[in-house]
Image 1 (tube, rainbow, N blue to C red):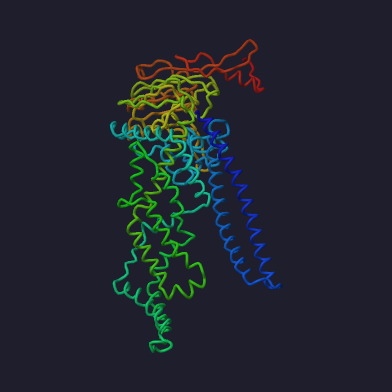
Image 2: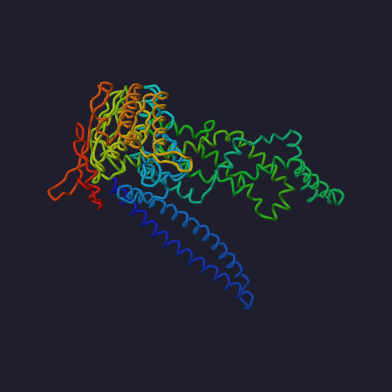
Length: 611
């Protein structure tokens, strides 16, 4: 079954489930109203008529029935929320296959940074971005992990040695390939995570407590008193008068308990607050982790991640269940009568704090790692969705030397029917393509296609090409440059700073795959030509390789200093007999021989005398 069919079938099934659950919810709601009405009727009959007292049993039965119906109602609503989340998963898949994926609200704009080596230039984050296309994560941890991966996380940098770099990328490829075929797993993970995340639980305060809180560490004497005092209080209240104790003995014992609680308040209160029902939301993620724990994986990377969800051999869900039981005891304090009158007698808060502290000492150091693991799995699942949606995409081959050889390479953010694919070959370090062409002919799109496919390849995802061979690379760009009036920075100075960053990266983290769009177009043609040649020479001297687009045909002219380092390619426009200009976006060898600037000026109504 292809991706579209799979999503359509899944969506239809979820829609049927939602319809059936809506009917069930209405039926249970009606039954609840009937139970309440019947109970009220029976009570009225008992009060105003001579109905047998056995009718009270009927009232009790109706109350019990109402309680059961409330539980069933809640379960039906929970199942409906899960079915709606499943439908959302398939809707999102269909959106990726269509033209509506840019409407997805979580576009990663928060991860944008003008200081990043390439993300802003290549539309990695923000509206109509690579992140927005790929993102199938439902938790902030998954989005953070996906953003880190696309921004060149650990293991993808060019300065990693070749065997380690290749092994890391290949491990991610194997994980993405396996997850691509596990549609039902990705569906369950997405649906359960969405239901939890939709409640907006924020486990951060609890995670910070688990990592950083000072140990409660009660003394042996305090532990002994925590058991002896409640026993004395209960005993004195229950049988004190029977054994001849003074009448107010229990008051003295309870006052002693209050003093005990007061002396431990500074340590107990923060622990209880962190685990309260408002902040201790960690347990709500148990169902999400259960999805990962319950799957059998073959890919080593997935098995490694699954292994990180163990604490001394115990599964995360088991630890969360233990935490849930403790938090359940803590939440008993929500009842005012219990909190004010019973809890102090039992030293309830102290015992709950001790239990939480034991849990923290055992599992606390692992909590942040659990969520990071969840995020990594969600990030891999996002890349897997991209792989599943486009079986025509290829898995990049990894070379043992820096290179970029793309065959039928296309822009991954453009639909198959809208893009034009081209061959792009950067065979070795110290090599550059000089891309010339008229306005709107496709130069910038080509550079972004190179960059985005390199980003996908380094992340372990398939690429938009029939074949791509890629060596180690750190992507660096200077394409989308803007000035700053507030900072007093001109466009030209801003561009120079961006190019300086690319050169610095080439020195510090070789090898660099550079992409420079309309290089130095903020200055006059003579200085632009001299400066551009110097930059290309510097980058190739450092072993960097990449592409430079320009309108300045002088840069494409053969010169001794760049001989054997550059190759000229170009795009061009076509003009028919009526003077209508079109573009085929096909990359050709050599230097462009035409320009369309004056023609475009006339097309928008600007007079060009003598042209």
